[in-house]
Image (tube, rainbow, N blue to C red; front, side, top):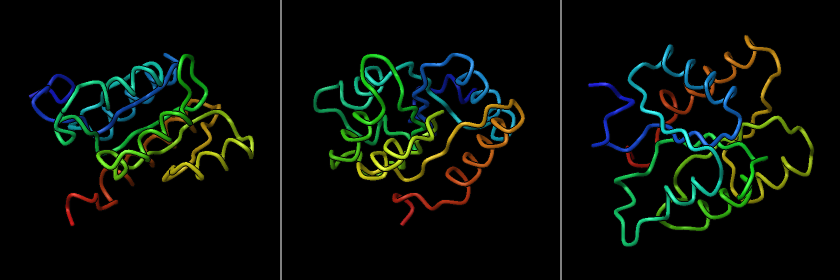
Length: 151
């Protein structure tokens, strides 16, 4: 069964990224190093909020990802607002959120951790370095980290 089209189970990764180039590279790396990983790519924070909170009376476990990779500099709704909402809601606060962004500004880092980020990664500029960062994040959060539901 193709993990990219298996709609019967929640995604492993919810990728919230407005840059098509960064999203495509992230998807390529995850597919190569973790081929069974199901990824849903959303292009801005508004899509992420709709995905996570749009259905009324939804069963949160039916759509919750194991990991959110979240850019913060996005149109419509920025990543900090998505992070605030995810961590404020008891149905989603347990989902690990890794901020992956080009910003190394101290205020962005501080705000991210203040509102609940589990990790903050500044996207490397070089192709190989970016790919390696995605590989390491995926390895840790999808294979080494023990998610809450396994306790």
